[in-house]
Image 1 (cartoon, rainbow, N blue to C red):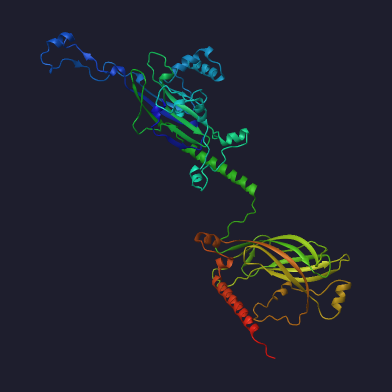
Image 2 (cartoon, rainbow, N blue to C red; image 1 turned 60 degrees about the horizontal axis):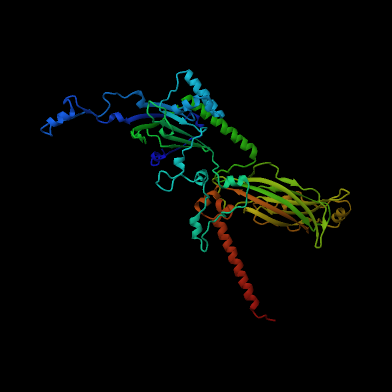
Length: 562
């Protein structure tokens, strides 16, 4: 039976829906029969033997042959059959009807169910099928001729029991070709011997893990006057559907092609033709719209579920020409300050064209920390984290070559057990224009004031000179238009240092475009503006430093004149 299906086309389809609506239309027709053999007609010549002796010219017509075909016996309804078979629909053959109708033959639960089904069919109009029947996935049937290949052409050869067991086992996926190409090694890459004896390991390594269901559409091609046997059953089509939704139909549908042919193995050698057509009920427009609506609702619920699991704190991709910068910082420690009980007040100043994405308050205050004496200095460990999200969006008509980056100002203060507050130092950090991790040590200073009174106040009752505007540390407010910045006469004293750690993340569409064009973008300035100016300025500074070193080296070699 399987030899007739070896060289036919196999149809592979895929469906995301349940296969319960799958249906095929099968048309079976008998082409030749024993009655189609020509039969001699002796009606015109009487006795055949006597007529042959009286014929003088053998060229004349001696015997009249009947016309090919079944003119005297027209095709009966048993020679043609058309039926629609649904997925996993059980259609009984005549042999099964006789077998399952006898109650003593039924032992299992499935056979009991088949006995009740046949009893109900007999109470009604009987079977709607004649020669076409089916074997479903629950039936104890396997096409061993298709899966158990023999080694020779001997029809009496029987497959070994190991061959029958290896039908449901797949080979290991070993790249033997690449293994042979390696120098000095001709074995497989993976270890073919495993010590894991668990059932799960055996299942994952050997047994096919994809579940599937199969059904066979059969034909009982026995004579009409007797009950067929297993030898009279022939496979018309096999349908296999696995868990991934792949549908395998062998042979493929041939509604517009030539029909398939089957020749019986008996003495009569009868020939049958059959066709397979797709007969599933088409989805109506209302049902299709309802299905699309259901899928949309399902996808929306799934998207909402994923959003609830991930959270809504992710920032979308910035628009073209906009730079998003996320600063994840940490006030690590402070050391070498005069008094104990330190805390740091910090805030960020945004230049022109910069704005805050989250909270408008870009500031914070650390906790009070007492110093710890080490071999070299007294250190106060804060480990205070902070987070700022800012964006830069210049107007289209702006032609400035340089970008003014935000500044992080630091003010270190102290408080003792008598609640005497003192200013310990001021400092600032210009946010680096390069993404990544940056560890910066900020050296601070504090104003001392004029005379001895500020020092005595600081020691006895607390309080010390402080800046009214903290931005004076970098550049006083209102001095942007002045060409010269002078702080002459302002008295300060060197104070301790603060260690700050910054993790900077930048988002800019120019970075994505650089990845597509394979161009290197080192900093945000290279992607936004000012690349040529910054590049030329860096080259000038490097050349100046090299020339200065050469001049110092040359000056050191000159003889000294006294």
